[in-house]
Image (cartoon, rainbow, N blue to C red; front, side, top):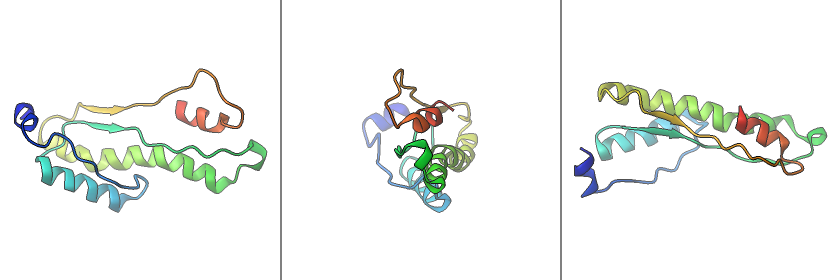
Amino acid sequence: MRQELASEKSAIGVGMDVSKEDQVNSGVEHTVKTFGRVDILVSNAGIQIVHPIEEFPFADWKKMLAIPLDGAFLTTKACIKHMYDAQIADLITSLKELWAACPVGKGQYVRLAAA
């Protein structure tokens, strides 16, 4: 399969809000229709919202949590059934970066990214 894809389309871009289940499901189904299966999921979505902690709106905090956490859950949920079908369910990858230096005002994001 890998060699077959090398001579054809080997990647596509699929835009979605990973905190919205219907968009995730639609994007995964589009991927499966294009390639026939899902071999690997890299769940690495995140956003950065910067406010001093004492002024940080709770709604922004919840949004900053929803993108990486709900996104990882929803993309895994949508992909895993296809990976099981192809007997490739051991290839789920989650990547996070941890900054060595935390810029002023970005502590909340850095702590979240490390979680």
